[in-house]
Amino acid sequence: MFLRYFCVVILVALAAVTPGCTAPAQPTEPTMARVALEAPVEYERLWQTAGDVLRDHYFQLDRVDRGNGIITTMPETSAGWIELWRPQPQPAYYWWEANLHTVQRKATVSISPAEGPGAYEVRVQVDRYRFSLEERQIDNPAGALRLYSNAAPTTSGRLARVAESSHWVPLGRDGDMEQRLLAAIMKRSGGLTATDPKDDHQPAPPSTQPQ
Image: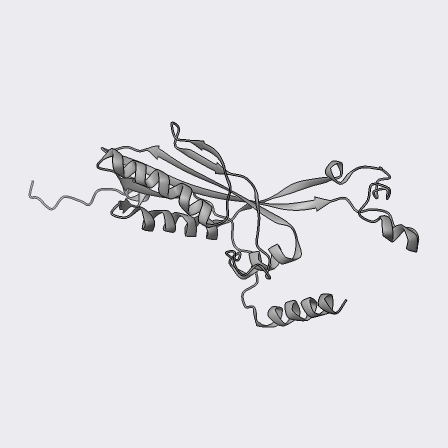
């Protein structure tokens, strides 16, 4: 009981000093970078680095499709405040969200050919999900003992197992983690030239040569 109150006090104290706790805006564009690879060994280094960066962020790899240049991960439960050895969710809104709910993240990295000799696009997407469990009916003190068992009916009157009365609610993308993963991949790959894909769509400057 003391430990529970202690945890509540710590969380309340952190709330008082945590600024900017508002929901971040959802990304509207893909999180990506374009790189120029001059040799097959550079592609191999980029591919291996992408997997290493995901593992370093405590993701367990699921699909590793080198032929199509796609790596996906298993859903990973976000770190709580007491798990100081794991990367904490950022910014503050996501940190609080992970401490008040069970939130999972799933990452996808794709490396695909782009226009131009040796050009590739590296895309990173991180999707967030919140665990949702249908509430149980508690109509007497003894019923509280059955709160997390199949013996307590749900609010809809069903006697269902937890797996049957729960689901994961999509919360959208985590743009901040996407940027951090992409930056780590680019930094650790070493020696790669990154260009902004938007540059391909910019109009050419007017000619200054005499007609």
